[in-house]
Amino acid sequence: MRIFDPATRSGSVFLDDGSEMPFGAEAFDAGPLRLLRSGQRVNIRVEGDAITVITLSTFPLPG
Image (cartoon, rainbow, N blue to C red; front, side):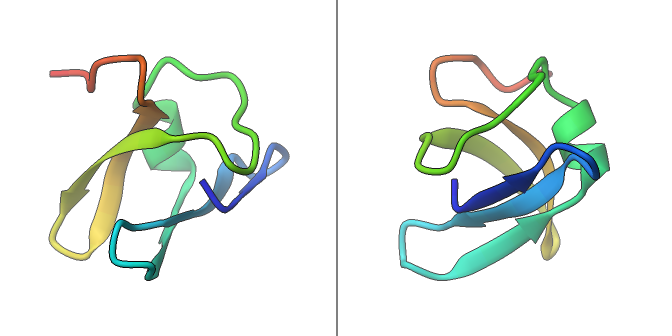
């Protein structure tokens, strides 16, 4: 995880190829999280060109 703004519940992640991808509050709210910290490893679900779910790598992605 690159950055997270708790006020807006949005941020961005670094993908495995080194590129950065933003996510919005909807993706954050779709998972069970309350907070993210820079540097945490996360799982994401991407649909089209948007992250739809983000969660910690120790949590499964919701169905």
